[in-house]
Length: 305
Image 1: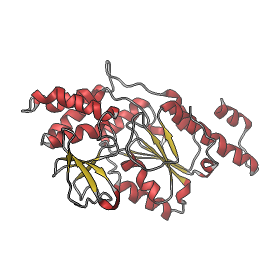
Image 2: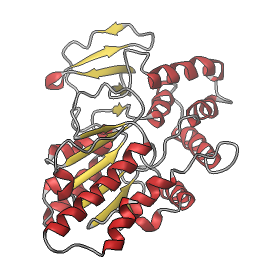
Image 3: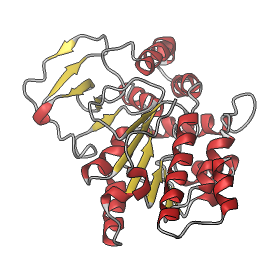
Image 4: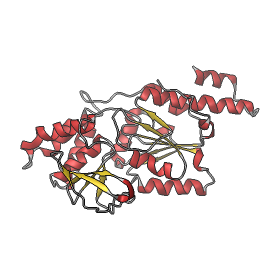
């Protein structure tokens, strides 16, 4: 269960930045279909079962390599980040590959040809690069599985309690940033009926780079770093940029992660995230009451209920 007894920092939060996929909903049965659609009608279709098994093993944490690690597109290596830009490499069969002190620019992933494995979507993207498939093949499989997720029998479940808690959250800015392209991102928000809850929505957001830029704009507007909370399931995209400026971070994921960073909160379920949203609201309303600016009693009871 979620426990807010960590400290009193939630009372300071004025901006909450949410990821969408894996954060506002949790569903991973899509991954197997995504891999199958990716490889069907290609020269690698015979490798489908092996690819599905590999994807599931990475997702469950059964492999040495997993979430929080990287894939080097040009070297075709599974890369574990060490200190000072050094890395340990692995081949697909799990054998260790000497990197010979080659430096990787982990802080600029795009320039370094590194793909961070932060969620199940990234697993499939990595497999696409491994099999050297065209970007159009990955995009077609992506769009197919995304449409399936909005209709029976693969429709994902909406967590109504979390949606209501986000709607009631009273902060200066509720921001949604997703790397999903505009058409699919808008469809998912419409399906969850939550688009109206956010003050700002950014699809095709280009995280982590454009999140860093957005954070700089918040600081220029006068917000302090400790007043910003980022909630997401992909640490590299959603959390590291906020952590670097001294902001607050909430990592939510049901999967084991090899990322060594310590976050302000580590959640696994949407129920816990709902509790966090409610707890932030309650703590802030208590502070308003202490300041003599308490809202109507009915509003307080509504949130507590």
